[in-house]
Amino acid sequence: MVLEKIGEGLREALRKIARVGYIDKNVIDELVKDIQRSLLLGDVDVKLVFELTKRIKERALNEKPQPGITPKEHIVNIVYQELVNFVGKKPEIELKPRKIMLIGLFGSGKTTTIGKLAKFYQKRGLRCALIGCDVHRPAAMDQLQQISNLINVPCYAPKDIKDPIEIAKKGIELFEKNYDLLIFDTSGRNALDKELANELKKLGEFIKPNEVLLTIPADIGQAARIQAEEFKKLVGITGIIITKMDGTAKGGGALTACAVTGVQVKWIGVGEKLDALEQFDPERFISRLIGFGDLQSLLEKARDVISEEKAKEITENISKGKLTMDDFLFQLESFQKMGSIKSITEMLPGFSLPKNIDLSKQEEKMKKWKYAIQSMTKKERENPEIIDSSRISRISRGSGVPESEIRDLLKTYEQMKKMIKLTSGKKRGLIGNLMKKFKMFKGLL
Ligand code: GDP
Ligand code: MG
Image (tube, rainbow, N blue to C red):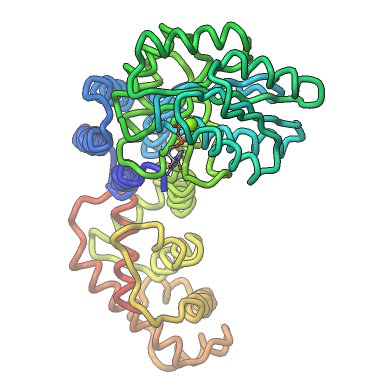
């Protein structure tokens, strides 16, 4: 998983929002602190983190949600949007480049990424060829050759030529006619020095690539900013590839540091294998990172269940210690509407159902209770205490639900009433109430 730690922190922070009763300044303060903590742990620059959370806070406190959006959805949307902006703009990736040159320091992942890129473009129907211009590292030519064998593309990587421009020239002559895309490997050193800058500059001037992509390993964290800026200044780059995003907690630092340089991150490397390369898409990236889809559906489901007014009415009844059969039915229905109990509880951290429970049976039972309640008279529904055995027989005949199950229902109703008396009076919002309901049912299962 990419950026596991940051993702965990952010997801937990946002799920807290889903769980609280209502949004107020304290909730927002806490959210902001949680976000700061997760990002700082991921080596994101302190100043950037504070700028980001300041924006989130200002928007959360000042912007009104659009009609039809609940305050919680509104907050979650703001955090999502700001995080998307935080990691950069969506890059344009040229789908039919003629020549791509990869540059970057030693070990940053150039040669591996060349294989990945060739594979990507090959899948899209381009005929690719690789040209090895890393004349400094002895094993570099063999490595490129091996990679090219793996993906079945031709490679020109001579070991006896020491001038990268000469190799580039011969490679171009060799492949230009019959191939759509030429990808050039270059040498890297331990630091970007004058000599390396010169070599890359001259090589670039000769090749005239459509893309000069800089590889930066994610594990250098926020130091990526300096590296990106230096390369940009000395040789010019059209995009960045952050490699090794899979193996470090510092990827968030690298990513956000690059975003501020104005050079776009176009790709991210997420593993050693040759298909472990992704086009960088900020929306998709953040969405996955914070589990945005799940969050949204959780919030939407919660919204479908109860209208605010009805919830208020019931809460008022309940706080008076009153529970009609209609309220009870309403609770059953809202509970059912939330979908399969299991899928809901899986979305709520810290809430687990006891094992070995047959949930489909439970839902079946609720259906029968519903029929039984519908067979009750208005008087019985308002005052379930009056339901004696002769009424039970009548309800059973009317609804087709066995008497034993109606007794069960009445017992459950009584238990719920007791629990409501115990838990009423505390201030809780919509979700709080839902959670309370879950707990009631959990107790009954
Ligand atoms: P170069 O010196 O810049 O050409 O770097 P290499 O392509 O030789 O890569 C250096 C090391 O990093 C190799 O062991 C690669 O397998 C590894 N590597 C490259 N990209 C990734 C990546 O995205 N994830 C992981 N885990 N390893 C990578
Ligand atoms: Mg290499």
